[in-house]
Length: 223
Image: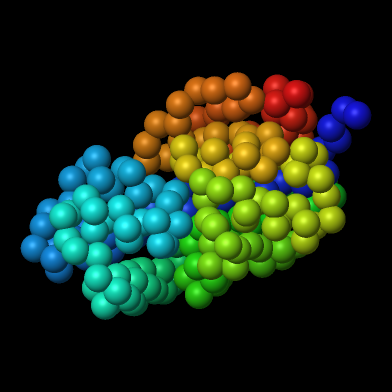
C-alpha cells in the first residue's frame, strides 16, 4: 500500500527550539567540574544522545571513572543546570512555530518526540505550546532512547498511526537514525552538526516555508 501522510513527529532540541546551546553550557560546565575542558569532538558526539548514553560518553571521553555515585551526581548536576537555563522562554529555531501551526491547520496528528527527560521537556513545552501536539514522548519513558526507534514507535502507537505513514523532523544523526529505524520518513534540518546524506532522507536548511507538499514528498522519497 502507498503510504499516506497521517502524522508529523517533531524532535525538540535543535529542531523546534534552539536549546542545544543551553545543553552546551551545562555539559561543558560538567566537564570542568571534573577538571577537564570538553573537546568540540566530544560535545558534537553528545548531540541527540539519550541522557544515559550522554553521561557514559562524557565520562569515557574525559577519562573519568564512571562509578555509580559519579554518574548519579553528574546526572543531577545536568538536570539542575539545564532546568536553571531553561527557566523562561527558549529561542525558537527559524520557521518552527509557523511549521507547527501549518501542520495543525492541515488537521494532521502531531507528536513531540525527544530524548530529553520529561521533567526538562515540560520547560520546552512551556515555550512551544502544548496545543500543537496530540502526544509527547520523552527519553525516560521508553526502554531505549535514540538512536533506537523506541520513542518514535511509542509516539506512533499513542497516535494510532503506522510509523510508515509518519514524517519525522530531526536535526541530528542520532535522531535521524532513530526515526528511520522506526520506519518513518525523515526531513532533516541540521543545527549544530552536519547529518550525513542517505537513502530516504530529505534535507532543508530551515523550517521556514515548510508545506504539506514537502511532507508528502518526504514520504515518497522514503518509498
